[in-house]
Length: 544
Image (cartoon, rainbow, N blue to C red; front, top):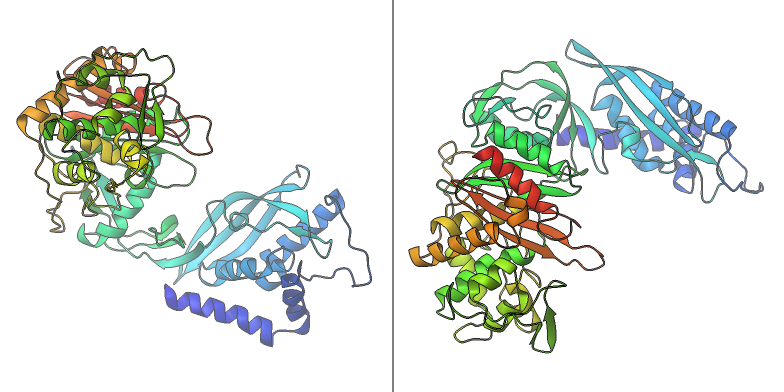
């Protein structure tokens, strides 16, 4: 059922508009003109103003629900403030989604908001299943007509629908999968909620390779080409088993950790292999920011900048990196965190563990550093910014553009034009402590024959210095508080990224414990150790 059905639905709406009864045609025209039909004020009447009263709320919702229950999509749409969009989705509700025998029970109104419960039946090819869910409508005043109208949103029809989404019932695009972790533990979205979009994508991409057979399902078809989201299974398919690199224990810790901080994400990888052990997001939009986010990483970027300075011979771990109050680069003045004491005699290790911005700004002025040096280090040594990672699902592999002017300095401390996500920074830590770039992946490339990205990595000497500086940061520097209590070989780097228009910085933290590396970010979470630090520490604790 797919594109052909959608054309039929559009055609069905067109037929009603052109060939339907005059009443229905009038409703659509008047609705598009400012508030639908369904009987209304004449042009001579003075439109009402102010919020709808309780009688208007009751009358409007009764009329809307009544038409919806009868499958009269055009009529129901006429009681909304967007007849075109609501008509298309309500038509699809009956035709594409095969939902019938609809019974809607309103709840107690809360002002102009009316909650309701839908009981219906989904039927296709002799198979039927009951459907039940709750949603709500808000009644508003039409801007031009003054009529009381349902404020249209796709979530009125089903709470999980977003703009551009529709409902379909048919044979699933891909057979179901039983995703399992590295040890065979079954991974479900019920137990690991933030894995939901990941599991949907894995099914879309690997369902036909895992050995299963398609199910017949009611699903949400997303406008952004994301994998369909199943809502109800009419006929069970046969699930194929798909082994992932995830660790159920680490994933559970990641899920719990991000719940404590809004708009946060975390990724854990195994540095010796590149296998992803956990990916979790605390977001309302379902976006996998842990893999696909594109935001400034703040001072966690200093891992790459330090590697560039060492590889270029500008300084070394024990070499000079003076930490001054301010540093000016091409007319832009950079400062450190409030309260940081200057240290003119600081080494690179000392400026790194305290996260001194000015030390790094001053050193990028040294020869042979150029505008392109940081870009080359990121691409050639850390495998970033080349758009060639193949993790098994959609991912962004970082961006470190060659920048002139003030952005050359800003890039060095993870601001400017640099963009990363937790997946990228977990990989950076893994490369830094092993010296070898191993592209992160969630599904083995053996399953589909894809080639993983390659990079030359770091020299043993550079990697040893980076690892030791991260150890010092975790035990004596800005990462000490978050990493306290963790045993084993540990290291960290904190970061806070300033975002235009926001009073509070994004919190970043990346660290390692033995053969686990993790990175996290929390939007508007403050300093690196404030929000992202506890997330990473919790994940590393579970991975030990």
